[in-house]
Length: 365
Image (cartoon, rainbow, N blue to C red; front, side, top):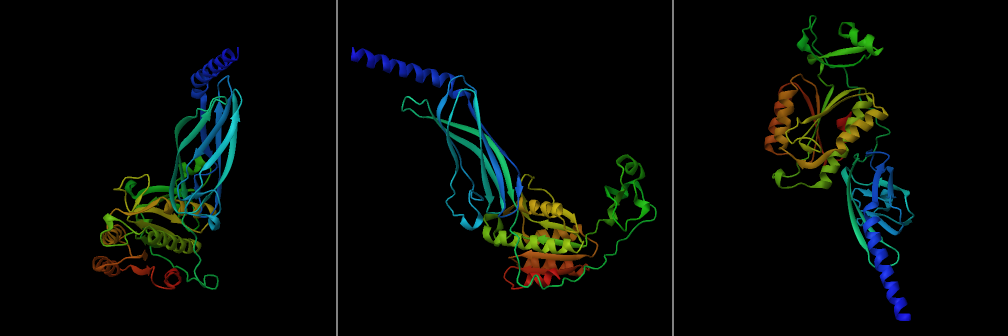
């Protein structure tokens, strides 16, 4: 009699296991949402993991895990280590139940970081057999460069940028207009797009090609060695971008219009993209700061072409004399020659080497 009961029990367990694998296992799903896709270095954002059981049978044991890239952590920056713990949650799901778990993640390293895979372990609750699922998804988080603070910043009194002379035409052709933007104090009424203004309900100005000269040009070089295409020093590149971020913010606080050039490969863009990756106008505001930080966070630490070539492209593009600030940790004879050519064209060139103590304050002034 006891053997019959044992056999019956074994058959019942095998039947349950087969039914569970057939009807429950395919009905388990997971998805992730985030409160933000772009955060400042050291700041936090919320991640929501939703696990669903759409079957009519329960899922007694579900363990969901998401591996974290090195740039994201469950703990703040001052507590982070090289060994990141994954996002993990273990729970039991009833039939047709949906559970959402919220985690708080911190951005601890500049760059673009990807969350792309759920690893789920499941059990039917009665047999020791474990089932593994791998579900693919894609979430991209951009972490801005760290906002560094140089010694003496609070006491420094930055010099005003002054006025940049812009050549303007009295009679414009249709080819002269390159963009439209909201009216700013000082714009000529001759440039107002009256039809667009009437349609939008605010003053809109047509920008001319010959009024695009920036008040300052920031060149950010990520080449750290002569054979730039064979590798780079990532920590040094991050320092370059941090200093470029700080210097550009200083210029924006003075109300400048700044164009940024770089030889870094830009995430999500073709490698042949133009090195002028951002033109931004002060004064510095929260939205402006976020736009600048996000753009710098999207830069990889790898150079697509040399530092000398970067300066040459900037020299050929920006022909009207303006203020040029170069942020670099590397320089050679060819790049020095290109910098000399920039000066010959009438540009005011200031070079900030990472190895120069206090150079950032001098360049920003």
